[in-house]
Image (tube, rainbow, N blue to C red; front, side, top):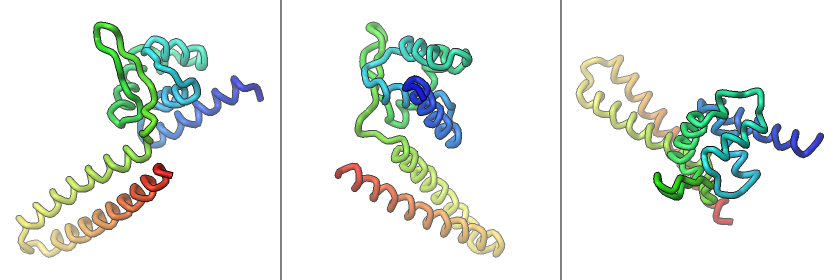
Length: 163
């Protein structure tokens, strides 16, 4: 298989992973592209290069789609943005960022908020509704266990990143 096809297959695989996480596939294409060809990229350069790699795909390679994907990647700390509105923005991979770590941290934050809301509801219930009390306790316990597991995974990943 030619190098071009292998690279395209790599981008498709990364895109599929993003899609399975619930993000646009082209977020993965952009991350993969910036990893394959490490340099600072403008939105237009990314759009043009993706258009070359995926000529059959008009929508995901458009400037608005690239802009939307870069905002998602920037939010999760996968890419860094430099420059200004006046001079134009350039994007590159944040070498210390990993999508998986960022997503796990975000999930822990969401879970903590959910647990706090459940505990608030439990306090207002004051065991008046035994079915609700049982359901709340089960949900809180499950989420606390899930968060501990996520924190252990993050700790392990952090140790690996240091090596």
